[in-house]
Amino acid sequence: DQQVKQNSPSLSVQEGRISILNCDYTNSMFDYFLWYKKYPAEGPTFLISISSIKDKNEDGRFTVFLNKSAKHLSLHIVPSQPGDSAVYFCAAALSGTYKYIFGTGTRLKVLA
Amino acid sequence: GAGVSQSPSNKVTEKGKDVELRCDPISGHTALYWYRQRLGQGLEFLIYFQGNSAPDKSGLPSDRFSAERTGESVSTLTIQRTQQEDSAVYLCASSLGDRDTDTQYFGPGTRLTVL
Image (tube, rainbow over all chains, first blue to last red; front, side):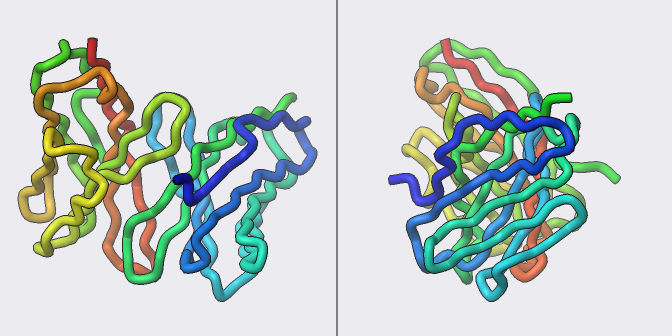
């Protein structure tokens, strides 16, 4: 039973355009969400997070949007750069627990 | 400063053998996690250590899997009588343990191949 789903296994975007990565979750009790980026042969690195009390969090070129009613979050990268090419994982957590539930990842390719 | 390190980076073993994977967390991080990533899958939580509390072992897939942590330092994940389905990348992460600002920092992983 996949509680966190990333339905697009891959995405290609032209350099300079917006990349939108999507994530859906099934458990309405999740209250903390994160995005991680992973390059080949490296561990995932933290990118950005959002608490359920917010619907948007921005950090430079990266913005995460949370739609609690739809149980959906998205990561926007604008403008996209070739160095953004990586696998992006979303993760969700329940309040009071440190157990993050990860999605299966979306491979982003930014074309120069 | 030093990040999370894991060893070995790659391990090839024969079915039925035992393997031990090591994780060195970031100094000062009280929380430590083990995850598994099978080919084409997301990160699967295995076990969580926080300070001196009893570990959360709820993600361990079978009794062939066990993990230990010495204080707030090194952790080892042991897989006994390995099976081919154990083949995966095993990732370790550590964090400060502060829920509000908790960010998990991952090591590069150990790629385990069971023949």
